Length: 433
Image 1 (cartoon, rainbow, N blue to C red):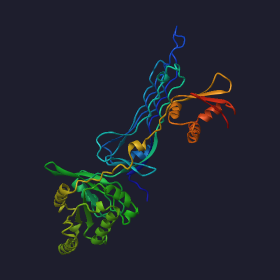
Image 2: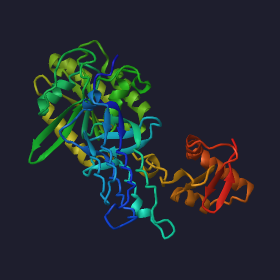
Image 3: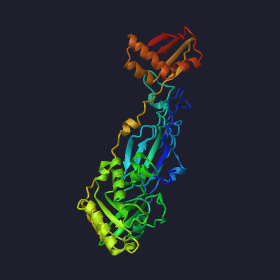
Image 4: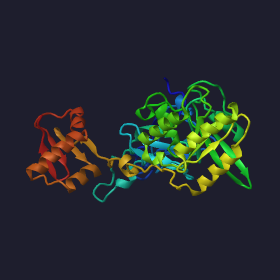
């Protein structure tokens, strides 16, 4: 069955690329060879997530799946700095967990985060050639390229944050209870698989007391194995602090309330021991349709089985009988429930997740003499600083560096032939295919 409620989404995000630095020279009257005046590129935009309390599903992400920040502009002449790229701000509902799609690792849990979370930073703008003038090279013809954008595919998962979760098989009366006690307006119909979207309602008990209650989609046995809508249901309930387990005590649908309770408790346990250990109340609903003596018998059976560990409260959602007691009991339990709303710990650091390689400039040019090519720039200097070219291993690394950085391709593009000379600072190499 298609997953209709939007509690998971897959999106592509990309930060802005940094603008390239500019290569230019002052061209002024009476300055025969003006100095370098190429400006820096602008910074690329960031990808930022913020909590929007007005949202409670991830539906928007079904329509828009790509989010790109603006690129930084290239630097200009006369030391002009390129404009920075615009950030992209993505609004998510409270309780959204952001994971890397490829590995499934948690990057951040936006459970109740107040401040914006910058997931990807835009690329740094490249430095213009004005930064690379040295006493030996007063007119550098290279500028630094902007840092590349970072692209990622994320999966967003929504895990509801509610104090009390209503669980139970379909059509036991959970939606009716929620509509009676809170400001939620669930659509009520007596079908299996009714509620596909967890309904949230705020329950007010007066004197400034209250809590958030969620009616969680009808569980189907096999949920822990991912049968039916089961896992989606369990994903939502993970953060709930108190569980109200609603059963149809009148067996209107011919089900056995005790078996139902055991089936669902087992599902919870298989999914997460922590979840199964949450404080629970068994709510015996639909008692108004029974004769008084049958009502007594069923209550006795439930109490003998589950109390004192789990309190059993008789109610009738239809007539409102027992509802006030149920809410008071739930409120007491919330006050004493362990305050361990699961916060999902990041499984990868942002530094690791968004690491970029350092991006220093270099140039490959033809020399003044025939058959001579010159390779230079900070990237090359840095490599020479940590490579011993006289050692076999070092020389092999140097050759791999030339290939990996595209320098060999650039030399070929300039028409280098076998036997030509490549000059790299103090070194001269003969070129062979």
